[in-house]
Image 1 (tube, rainbow, N blue to C red):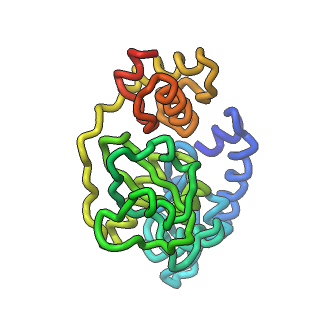
Image 2: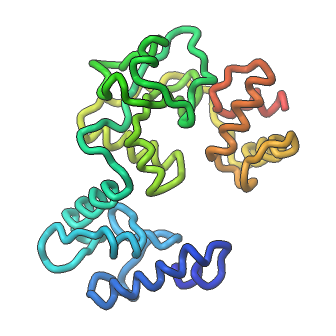
Length: 255
């Protein structure tokens, strides 16, 4: 897939260096062109790292002289930790924590782009679902509601943003971050009762309508990305709906 993407895609500048990095790994015995498999975009192993990242941040965790992310858990985990450190991970700081929101919360404040000190969120009535805030009061964080105001709510700390340096998909980042909290001992989140999400086809129709109103939603691909969320929130505010950036059938019909 890397050879194909490096030769014929809209981002050859991203993928061509990955082909060269894969050749470097091959020369070291860490990559087999006939046996190594990965994702469509070339990510390899248990933690899905690109060849250049494996070459530059890979760690031989089991001491066998090779970095094999597909077959060695120590290699995969230590390589991932090293890469996160290089991307700006802050040791001994949290990344994600479930919270409860007060009645009448202003959902226009929700979203990864709005960052306030934890103590200010406390003053606004945001509280941990259990225990205390894991982040210091001065730590700037965001409140996110991935499935809208009727679904779960989280506070996202600076380390949460580091995941976006690895993968820019909000769904990918949230899944990885939440899974990590579970490994640390956090309870299953309170799912709430969110409004059903749109189908892929409905999302494409919504994106076309948003684009027609002048919003930049990126590609019309039916995927709820950051640009689509921003556009949804702005239209919700205009229409007097709860501005939680969660696209619903009601919003689609109102547009």
